[in-house]
Length: 389
Image (cartoon, rainbow, N blue to C red; front, side, top):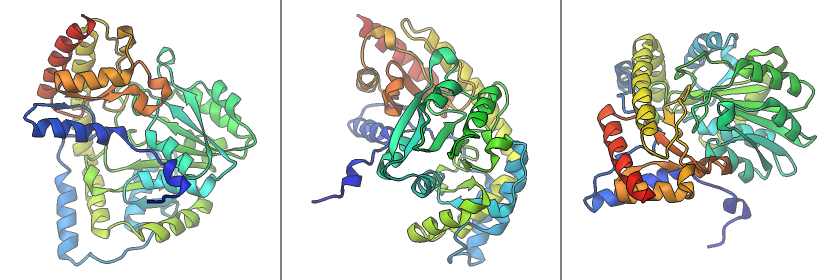
């Protein structure tokens, strides 16, 4: 088979590869604790399910407008704008089947061969994959433990060039759980004022912050008119399989993103969008209990990890991921993750699945039950004891 050169530049998401390997072990009779996928174990809201059922019974099974149902776009603007200290018009919201298309469409619309895109490392692996697929040069900037896994805005500024077309920010960050400081965002917004550079702010975990508050770079006047905010329903409302995401962006970009939607998926399912409206309507009842439970799980998994000799884990300020440092064992992160899967039946991800700066770390999702977290910790404690020996 002859494939195009761009297909060779397209990466993948290691979480699904590890998940497949773990399932293969389970088919052999092995018991595996799954900490590899960032998938909430909560049920989707009843309000979402009921809204979808009503929409289906009402015959909403046809095409919808490509940028999304106006009532959903209006509700997203009404709810999510004020959370960021901003006012958005419904026409600035674009709804897509999942949040990944917002990344893809924005990168395709703004970056091409000869351009550069800055992105966080460690960071969601699809950033680099999509940048490279678009033909642009992927330029990482580090998020380091000694800095609370926050960016250094002066370092980011030093990586800017006349070729920089886009800067990607992730806060709260997957995989580290770091939450960007307001002063860092203000500094970066000020720096980018002088550059012809757009910003993609990935805020998909913005409802899950344990310490401090969520700040969006879009809230700064100097960045507001060139920032795309990415968010969605998968994490906040435990609706991963529904595939419902959205972006808020300057009005001038909307028709171009809409054309990409028309050329790729036509539109987002109308009845699924009705489910999103249902989920938003009960957010004050469903989101706080999830956050409280994640807080309990965070305390348990971080405390347990720090009791394992040779493991050090900072307390994540957001998301539902722990990012323990396992560099003391003197092994590659990938080898450590493979060992835990094969020898302990604990599926997790190597830090290098998220970039070179992830070497020496593992990513563990605590979006699972407390019983499974405790079982995983017990297995890891025993396995690491043998690993050292």
